[in-house]
Length: 192
Image (cartoon, rainbow, N blue to C red):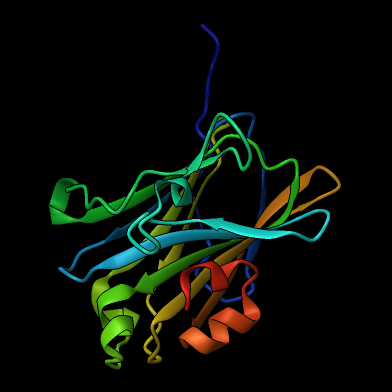
């Protein structure tokens, strides 16, 4: 019988830590947290020709197309603002990715929507959150969402797609809405 081994889960705990990965046609980006907070998972990008975009809950702009599509560009689908219970009482939101050939940079972002709308100071450390990235080739990453700094936007990680090589980089940066709009390509799609 052929011996098969699983790839080890990689935890990118420190800001700036990076890990290469591969995938064919399935990558799952999942935000997991264990509080009643209304957190939203978003994925923004820049294409290789400089265009910006993103997928996020259709609740932001009341537009179902904001969820994306696996069958046409961007080949990325946000599964909606549905908190799905997990074992241990954790909640989650998911984004499925089929192809990033046309994209050079992707930004995994978590937003505390309710606190942002009401402009109430908040820290992400209280939510015991993390983002898990799993690919169909067996790569499995975990990036904590746990900074104690106050802000409404958490830039979790950046995915670089350069010359056919992909890597995830822990950004671990808490931002205000204004900072996020200036620093994250595509973020302005969810702001006024």
